[in-house]
Image (cartoon, rainbow, N blue to C red; front, side, top):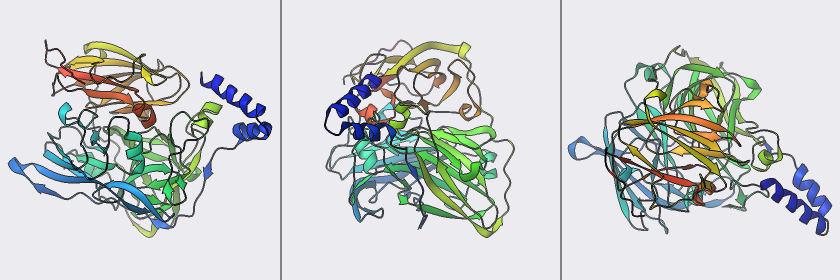
Length: 487
């Protein structure tokens, strides 16, 4: 259908006066290749303040508010948590009881979803838990998952793309006692660096949400912000630096690598560390995915993190930004560096056995529907029995890029188009890129929390698609229970 629409658009351009020149530009315009002069020190989001609450619970305070930010275009109106843009980094340890008090000082309803976190459905922050203007909500749970780079962002009905684009997002880092965490760079803001990447476009001094002609995935900006910083550089004082990459854009897919093809070590993905470092020269992240990489530097050198072509060479990928390239971040090594060594092994990942699966399900992402159905908050698309393992077959049924994200659980990838997954998909995941016509087979254990009246989400994490109804729901129940959703 997309190809027919593009063909029809080309015909309209030709029939309209001057259509030939417009047609040539439309199809022949080159992809973006944005190179910058790095002139601003990378902002490091502060660690969120917390206090000791009842029963030893660590309590955080977040307020969603509006403000003005300086991205080099003047005073740009933005949204953030506890500030004008983005939010502080929340940090807690496995086994720790936490509570986050969220207040909404915006003019519209919002929510806060804890992306990648294992927690009760009532605390998950999806569209079922709206926070009205002037309202508040407390999310409380006990952190029980391996150390990982997670993030938080809004998840309201039909407004997620706009609210994330305006700046509502932040990191949530989970720590644990695994020795690998101490063996890797772990001094936050010094050799352990959050790298929250977003693309933006501007109309004068304000953010613009105009969509690229021919695109089907939403806003594709021509400027990059990292932690809210345009054209950022980072002064490095150690031989090894750990970058926690987060694709916090609303639509764009990135293919991160170092200029010149310098290899680096991939040490973690969405749900935590890999079994061992994997040496590579690129890592592709769709919207919502995370990766932890370790980069080695020599004294005095400057090294640029870039995003190169992320998709194939067809017109569909071109219109959806898949052939664009960007400078992301410059690493500036000091004249002398603290010695550091990369460990050879990290953590042991227990493998889930598909032979133990209680259920196998299949879902096809196509148009703005999943398996032919759009979002309905009163419908359970899957009813899962607590403490069981399930295998899900996830397919992209057409030519538009999608991503698959599931709430509450981390999964393991069993197959990609019928073949064993590559090393970068060997760890725990909660989001995975669905290239056109691609098929994934994943496995997850749905442990701990049952609530027949409250659903978790699974959906496309291209936020325009999510807002337009490309979401489903699953309910975790005790054996013999039936779901009781009311919309």
